Length: 149
Image (cartoon, rainbow, N blue to C red; front, side, top):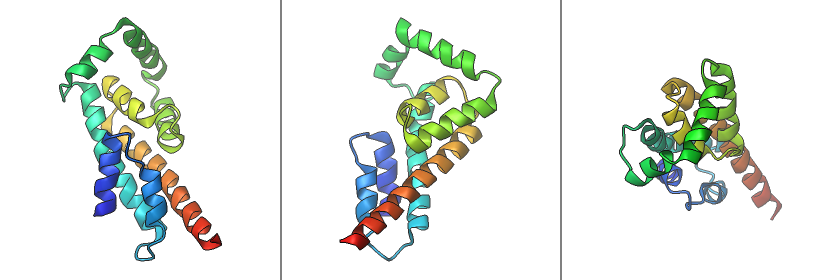
């Protein structure tokens, strides 16, 4: 439960170092790394939904609205819309890469996905898979590193 809540919080607040938390969690043999990765991914996607909804406009955040209404951001959104409109495979690939590697940052892509009205099942499924693989690798690497010392 702690891992889920911390992961959800880290999805909303970028300053919370989830990977560091998971590296420490890897030392506890209670849960296998695959379970911790799944719980962390589910927590992350729960938190990222808030950013998705904020981008979609269902959550009114004044500072986000001001940012999205700037000409520079509007031009960037138009470019993203042109790239992704009617191309779910491309959209899914970009979201998967962002969720796994963080390039472009997944927090930003969560807002962009909401603004572009990416289907929620596509956003959630690609995000969940990307985050799960990322966290599983972090946990396995941390477990191996602790083994060395």
